[in-house]
Length: 247
Image (cartoon, rainbow, N blue to C red):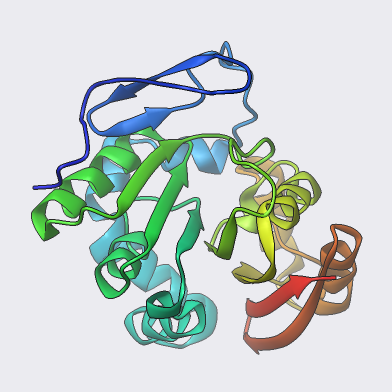
């Protein structure tokens, strides 16, 4: 069991605003009045039956269909790219039920912050972290478009399977760039629009707002405009992975 506090408040030394800590999760959305933008697909990810099958079935099956690759093997590659043993502060943006932030914390001695919109997902991550006895994982409920962190505070940020779901990916990229240290790295797995199945793509985008970027070059330009540069990239079917650094 982690020695981190489970209930209470945390206060910002600059603005003096207090934020609640509930069930071991620090809530930066408590004062937002519910104004955060949540797409239909993100709301689906807060539905308890989905959360119950997400880690074991939903994510691995969806990833295999989208890439023809093993999600378990891919996750190991992501963790190696982050290289947690050499990092002091890591952000797992849209961490979900702790699929990656928990192993990142287990393999490194520095702090890992897992941020997500969903209380049910974060509670699942909290239970997993407690079962593993992780004391270097902080779980935060927050908004990707207004990250509650100071400039250049992370030496690595990971965002796996979420950038294409954000209502404002450009705003999220700008916040990621703002909070990454000068020598830090951004590792992102997202989706690229397929060259066929146009009707299915249109349905997913319109009905549940499951987004796709139009191509690697367009995505690279969005990353550049946010203040980062893509240094390496890999693609498997519609799955696209890249590593970027600050300009």
